[in-house]
Length: 107
Image (cartoon, rainbow, N blue to C red; front, side):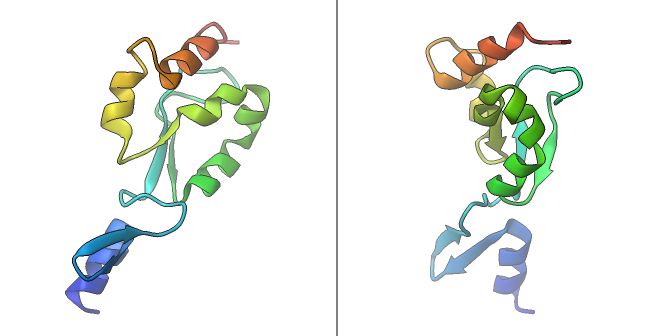
């Protein structure tokens, strides 16, 4: 395995020349994380899902069915630093969805 192939398999991305191209539905970090509030019997803050976004949403399907805003709060590992700030800052979708779910904590 060449160094280029090793890097592609580790990052979850394919490299073509000098540009990095991620595979459909994946992010280079290779994981997705739920950044919303805990919802008892459904989902916990910080739940990590490995693989593609589709796989993450499939694993969280029960929580998404019960509480649709959960879907918006499952973010890629690459977007995590920015999303953690947005979820606490009024005026954006992550904040609005977090607030919708915040009243359902512990239920």
